[in-house]
Image (cartoon, rainbow, N blue to C red; front, side):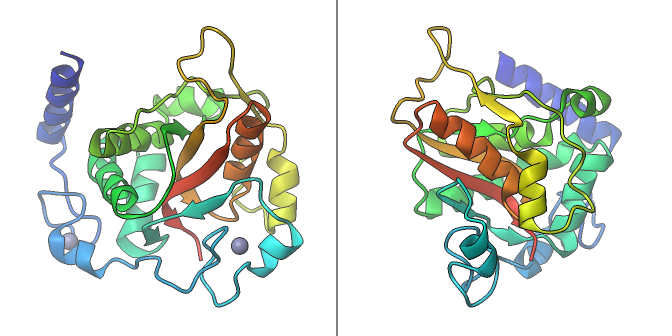
Length: 237
Ligand SMILES: [Zn+2]
Ligand SMILES: [Zn+2]
């Protein structure tokens, strides 16, 4: 029933705003097949920890300021049509972009070797969630869950401290200080997922230095998670 309602809601949205390709503006899908084929993928070589494109692994940032997350992976680079899509999802209220994007992340997860028993979206500051009406990371995680069959738990992490947006904050060390201690894992008898020994995948739209995902990982590991990987749609180069 829930599924039917969300399908109806999605198709109503499509009627109101026909989807168009973020690459070439052709109507039909958020990424047509030829634009999808041309999108910049995150190919080797990249840092095996934070997925920073480049020859050194671990990269300089990971040597100087190691992350608390086991590793981050992404199918795409934050560029071109993918960058447009993320902006639409984030700033233009285009939640209809989420299903296809999340499906692409899900297919990437199925093909890759990323250990995970539960998907956890990065929680948004409540003020921004209220403004926008949805959390884009949660929309993506929902679709990844549908594609892969891995359950999603959006109640496992809470934002306990609101941080200023990271836009304009430069290096990893600064970003880490900015976001440190912002998240708390929710455990206890009422929790849907038992974190002890769990393999968690934290889902977000974009990773810039990995600091936000790292702060999530640190909270999840303090609560007993055995491993935490980050999975994002796009990695900033
Ligand atoms: Zn196109
Ligand atoms: Zn790195």
